[in-house]
Image (cartoon, rainbow, N blue to C red):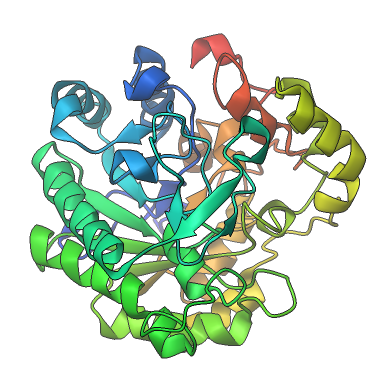
Length: 401
């Protein structure tokens, strides 16, 4: 009898890591770590996807140091939290699911009040995230600061491997710290870390080399990148091909081509309905609520959703690199998964789709053409700031997570 399963359920390998299928839970900041301590709710959140059948889940935004946290409720990969993070990782792995950690640094984009100084990024200027919190400005990193950031990534990689993570995903995109060096919109440096793309790649490639040196050649490292910032003068699709070629040559195991930035153009990530109503529902800062009501429609416009909306541009990267490629962006059905994998992608990351249907892999085993209930309303984005943490408000009982 021929195998009638969806090909997304076939096993594969990422470097030396064996994955039972091609479906990976994407990193979505959960806001379930009060004061940086992972809660039982965070363990239960990821166990839900593990029990639903994904091959690997990604713990969103694992800051490599305290200065890399956007706020005080983000995880820090540090010895002070070893026992709690071991409990988190091992609690998920017991459910037949691999665990990846998304290594991040906010750079100049922060509202972390535990800092005793201004946040630092590629260049100085306004701190857009912290503006309404009284953290109005950011400073440019010195060469010593850059060396310290590289060391923070290396130390975090050593720690994360030691506590049981199966893979590491370095976040090079979405306007965060390393993306601030890659983007000409945020990098105005005049030294060897600014100017042309080769220079702007210098810090990201140093970080990758440091992480690789610490975890070894057989440990999986993924890279999440932004293909286009959607802003004049910013990163664009042709830049992303050169960035991916450089990461490939430097030994990355897999690339996840995403879109947009959290700082300037988040709707390019999601498409669909505006995230503004959800942001207003949970925002508690009065100044920020005023700004959102005044400028939100322009900042967060609804964009027509269509399935696999990043596929055509991501295929250009598929043709340019030899490493494995992980598709993300509007994949909602078994038919989508088949088309993506048949196009030459190796894995598929799912965010909103799994928030709406945590059991999607199990359902796919019974119905290879299964389609997610996700309506792309994007209200899950706003729930990051809710007391329960991120969840699908339409189809998921947050108390069950």
